[in-house]
Image 1 (cartoon, rainbow, N blue to C red):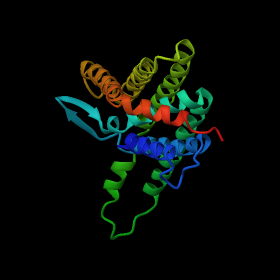
Image 2 (cartoon, one colour):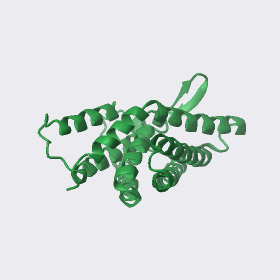
Image 3 (cartoon, rainbow, N blue to C red):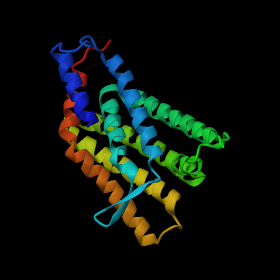
Length: 228
């Protein structure tokens, strides 16, 4: 899992076991930005594919999207809201670039021997409705998560678990509410829509709770790195 690799990486920094023994917080910020952006683009690429979990229907993005919120927690906790916000905005524009290029690739005429043009378009050609839903949900949910994380830190810096879980619950809750409402309203019964929103938000929050020990180790490890 991505987080375990980050923990191993930071652990090795502490004991001079890798070629990156002089890594600083500034340099790690760049790495986290890249990982965050990559996870965001992947999650939006697979978002239209749903799966069934214990009779509940969920978008495939729920499997990787919580990683984005975990990295957001690390960024907000260690670097502050403003730097976390920059990464969130950068992720938004990089995802927009990806979507634009997907559509350019779809628009380009395929050679006669390429038989998978239709499948390519189905996979990468998200509808305008899902595109708006994903962008709106991401911006609101991510910024609320980061802002709440830093706000609660000012209130009580010691309760890291509480801050991580509460910020995720609100951020993921708003993300699920906005994305599913805009993206799927009118395509399924209202009851099913509400269940999908609740289950998705809870799934992502439970995910955060399960991996919290790793999140905490990552945050502690990053805080021990030199500033510059």
